[in-house]
Amino acid sequence: MYLSSASAAGVRFLAAIKEGRGLKRSAREAGVNKEVGYRWLRERYLVLRRAGKTMVETTAELGFTTSRLLAWEADVTRDTDRHHLRVDARAEDAFWAAFGTAVGLIDS
Image 1 (cartoon, rainbow, N blue to C red):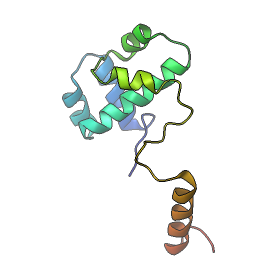
Image 2: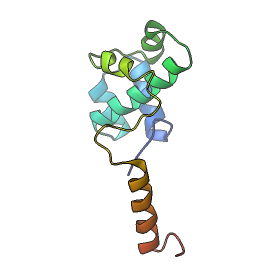
Image 3: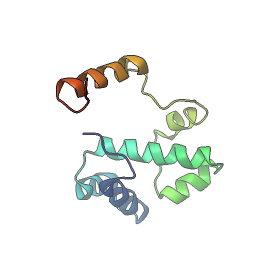
Image 4: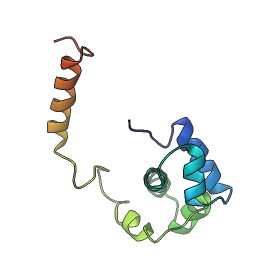
């Protein structure tokens, strides 16, 4: 199951980070793996940077900094947030449509 940073767990996680709790503790309290926490931080970081905030303003608002910031910063100007290992978006759409039909979520 894919949880976004806007989910209840994501909001709790980001609030805990902003309060100064560590990544592992915040992730544990939100009931997610720390890598999910990193994904949520990256997602929020990109939203803030693309909205015009500086790198310093963004890290201050998040209440968190990481060695991953340089990689995240490189993604600010990318037009898509799809991971480089993911399949083509059209193939993914076709898969989910077929899956939905197979399990009865979508009428054929």
